[in-house]
Length: 243
Image (tube, rainbow, N blue to C red; front, side, top):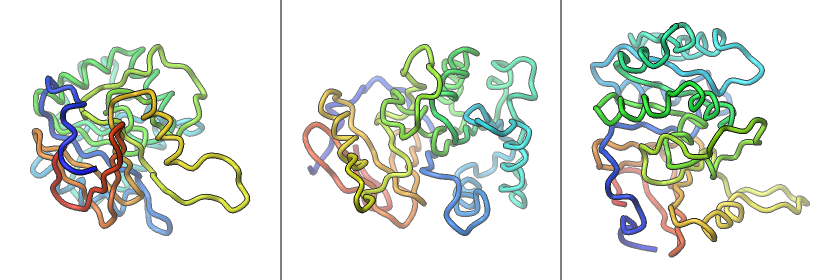
């Protein structure tokens, strides 16, 4: 598939600054090491970031926040976590930048919806506040979480997500299959989504991110990404691309 796919998108979407990472950690490297220079560059002069750790399952928000602080050590970026604030919506409204970490997408969206933070984050980002997500934090930036890889360990009120990015996202994308395993491949699963939905999916391999700067889109990293839509497939190379 070549050319633009904007005809399938919601053209009324407000502009925003987004950095949506496929993953936080590459094998054999410290937490956030590969992403740290991209986060630092993206934030530019902004040195304060509100972290949202709600995708964490099986470990504490304090531990998760400490991981992020350690991962960004040396950048001068000051990290506070939303769980440390009594008034969560006010914390979002006062944030200079917002970062949403990975984990379980269903748990993350459930808590965001229950605390009224979906609208708060959307409005803040549409007003120009930089948004950074990785894995589940990237998933919830799209129109819905229907293309997450995660198990639905809990049920959010709705699959509708923040809706800042116009495409569905599939982080950790791979076309590798396990020898002797009879289940569907990742691409087959995503094509099932495309068979009954119209919003295209951008598939982000490990070590890549999609960046939006007020309607201008770039693929960050050294690997190609893939866009799946009802009209076909399109390979995206690192650098600027059009929707």
